[in-house]
Amino acid sequence: MKPNFLQTSLALALLAAVPARADQVIPDDLIVQGSICAGTDCANNESFGFDTVRLKANDTRIKFEDTSVGTFPSNDWQLTANDTDSGGGGNYFAIDDITGAKTPLKIMAGAPSNSLHINASGLVGLGTAAPVLNLHIKTGTSPAIRLEQDANSGFSPYTWDLGGNDAGFFIRDLTGGSNLPLRIRPGAPTSSIDIAADGKVGIGNTSPAASLHISGNQGSSRLRVEDANATTAPRTLLALVNNGGVTASYSVAPGVAWETRADASSWTIAQAGAPGSGQFRLDDSGNLAISGTLSQGSSRTLKTDIRSVDRNALLDKVLALPLYAWRYKSAPVYERHLGPMAEDFHELFGTGSDPRRLAPSDVAGVALGALQALAGKVAEKDTQINAIKRRIEAIEARLAGSL
Image 1: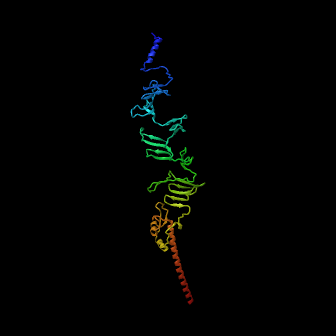
Image 2 (image 1 turned 135 degrees about the vertical axis):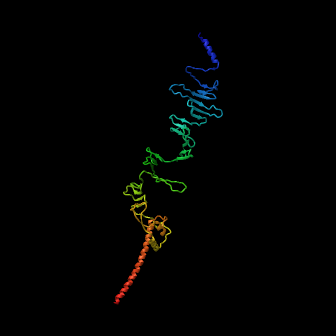
Image 3 (image 1 turned 45 degrees about the horizontal axis):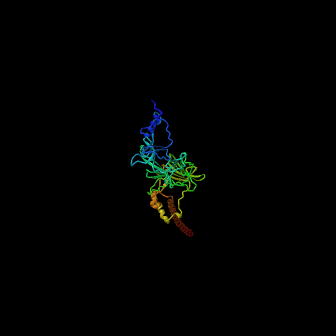
C-alpha cells in the first residue's frame, strides 16, 4: 500500500532529527544559497565570514578524479594544502598531478606578497604587482635567473646565473668558479656590442660592415691586445690566418691608405693601389727591397760615448780584412755577393752587438775612415814626390848651366 501524506511527513521529520551516518546521493542539482563547510572539524553554527566554500580538517585536499574512458583526457589532479607528516612536513599550497605523481606548482608558506603576479594584460611579475614587461623580476638586491642542469638526463651538472644590479649586468659561471665571463657596466652606450643579422659584430656600430667592426667618434677608438702575465715570454697576440694571401689595410685619410700584404714568399708594405711590389718588400730568403732611400739614425743627439778613431790603424785593419765572393744558402746558385764575413769584421773592428750581422753604417764608417787614411798617405806621398821633383829640377838646372 502506498504511504499517505501523513506517514511520509512523519518519516521525513524523524530522518531530519537523526544525524546522517550514511552517504547521501543527490541525483539532481544541489543549490546552496549559503556557505558550505566540508571536513571533520566543521562545527554547528560555523562562522563563515566571507567564505563560500571551506575545507576544515587536519588534512585538506580537493581532488579532481576524471573517470573518462577511451580517447578522452583522464588525468587526475589535486589541490593540496600542507604535508601530512608530523614535525618534518611542509606548509604549502600545491597543484598535484596525481596520475603523473608530480607537483608542478608549489607555494610555500611565508612566500612574500606578489611572489607571482599576472596582471590583466598577461604580464608576469616576480616580486612586483606592477609588471611592465612579459616577465618582470623585482627584488632588493641583484635580481637574477639561475639556469641549472642536473644529472637526470645523463649530462654533467652545470649552473649559470643571469642577473643585474647597480654594478652591471652579468653572466656568472657558477660551476666554473663563479667567474663572470660577460659583464656590461652601467652607462655603456647603445650598441656597445651589436650583432647584425648576418653575424657581423659591431663595437659602437649598429651596421657592422666586417666580421668585427669597431667604430667611435671620441677620438680614442683603438684595438689593444694585452697579455698581463707576469712571466716574460714571447707570445702571439695577433694572428691573421687565411688559406692564401693576407692583406691588412690602414686608411689614414679619405682616399689614402696603406696595406701590409703577406703571401707564401714575402711580406710587403705598400700604398693601396700602388703598382709593382710596393715600397717595402721582405722575402722568405731574408732579402729586403725598398723603393727609396734607406736612412739610419746618425745624429749627434742620438749618440753617446763619442770618440775619435785612428784612421791609419783602421786602414791597416781594412787591409787585413779578408774579402770573399759568396752566396746565401737560401739564394739561387746564380745570385753572388762580395764582401767580408761578419765574424771577421766584428773581430777586427768590434762594432755591433751580433757577430753574425753587419750594419751598413758600420761598413760605411770603416770604409770612410780607411779612405781618409789612404788619402792622407797619398797626400804625404805627393809632398814627397813634389820635393823630389824640385830637387831633380834644381840638379838639371845646374847641369844645364855648366855646359
